[in-house]
Length: 103
Image (cartoon, rainbow, N blue to C red; front, side, top):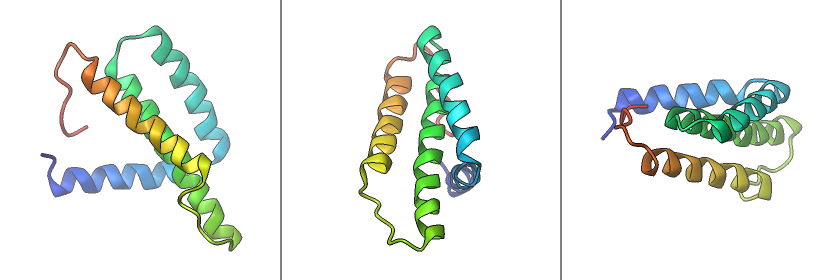
């Protein structure tokens, strides 16, 4: 089980990604999605999942900044989070090597 420090680091990384520009996250998504299609490296799936979480968080941030009520159940957010969960499962289940549990 990951330590509190590891969980804090993950949260910090996600918050940092959520504050990046949409263009940068979208560019990362395209690059990593293409890489996932051509590689068996489980970490590429994990990194793409991180980008999806960042995109979902960016949407929440955009809602908050606009002053609109924050809707965590909108299709975009739930779709990105479901994609991230699926990719993390695929990385874990499809890996022939042990993935570092703190990543």
